[in-house]
Amino acid sequence: MTRNVIAGVVCALLAVPALRADVKTREKTTFALEGIMGGIVRTFGGKAAKEGITSDVALKGDRKSSMSDVSGQIIDLQEQKIYTLDPKRKEYRVQTFAELRAAFEKARADAEKQAKDVKPEDKEQAEEAAKQLEFEVNVKKTGEKKNLAGYDTEEVVVTVTGHEKGKALEESGGFVMTSDMWMAPKIAALDELGQFQLKFMRAVYGESFVADMQQMASVLAMYPSFKTMATKMQTEGQKVQGTAISTTLVFEAVKSAEQMKQTESQKDSGGGGLGGLLGKKLMGNRAQPTQRTKVMTTTHDMLSVGTAVSAADVAIPEGYKEKK
Image (cartoon, rainbow, N blue to C red; front, side):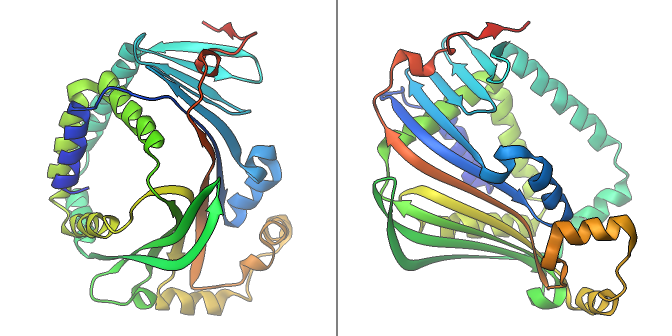
């Protein structure tokens, strides 16, 4: 984030408009790791790891609920409480905003203490490494269109590439992050969810959150490459208009030319034994060396959007008991 972006967030926190309308959505999210770890997750992670998680989100007044088969949460701005639900055990825990704020302050104090213990030479080395990075951001409208969840959408692909300054990606290695979005015209009802989240963050973190945003701006100013990337993302992001109905985010690591040479020379010397057999079984043909390696893929699909919300939609489900 640049100073302008952070200032915009701060202003939004200070001037969040009153919540005006109810909204109800059904959303599906998937998360997939690649490689051996991804194979383990797919094998032992159960239905959610294979098929993703579908959630029902409802907002009515000062109360918001988010429920899935594996977890649930209700936030009440008026009560200043969060209810965390366990659908399997039919239980819920209650946490106040004050308790959340205390945990946040402790975590921040611990982080500041750890930062003071960092050796000056390590800090200098990290700063120098950041200065050697270069980023490109590209936004492309593909022209493809389709109807999703009852909305006419068009495809927009945002690509962020990071590599060593002055060298091509294929030469130095680096990463590529691709966000494939299907954009509908702006859906006003979904703005209510964003406004609620901003109001919640300010209610919990107060002026500490604003101060952290200002501190972040100062820190980022020390890293020209990251500041450049944030500026490019902000500029290019303004070209994307509307509401994302479906988003697929792919993160890829890219080997350098030198790493590819080393990989090619070692590809026929893989280890045997149980570990090697397990790795081959979990990864299959994906073990073949390539310059780009997919690390992670996430998807988020808006399945439905509505404005008919009842009190029951944001209440603790019947039969749940509080766990203290």
